[in-house]
Length: 77
Image 1 (spheres, rainbow, N blue to C red):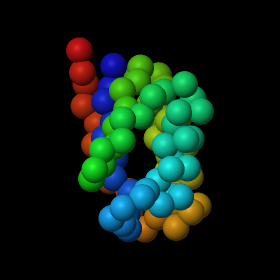
Image 2: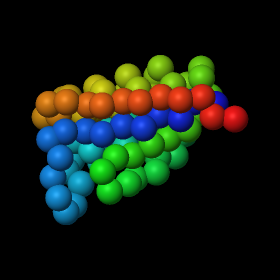
Image 3: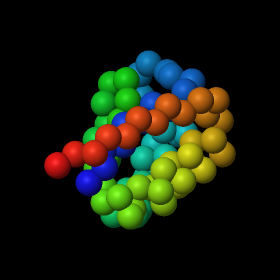
Image 4: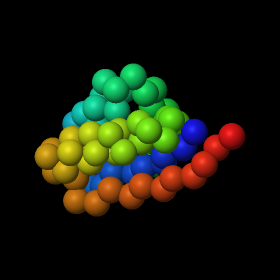
């Protein structure tokens, strides 16, 4: 399994902007639950799903005005 942590900028305090909620929805539409945090979010998926999930996340975020997306991955057992 691979854990993917991500942050979508520009960051805004308060309610998550549409670029974040749509990116999360794009990952969840693939059947992958997302944990939403205060300064970033994460999901854990099989290695075969990670590429598609990250692509969906980036497509949604950048199409709605994201200027920077930070992604960190690690193997979890």
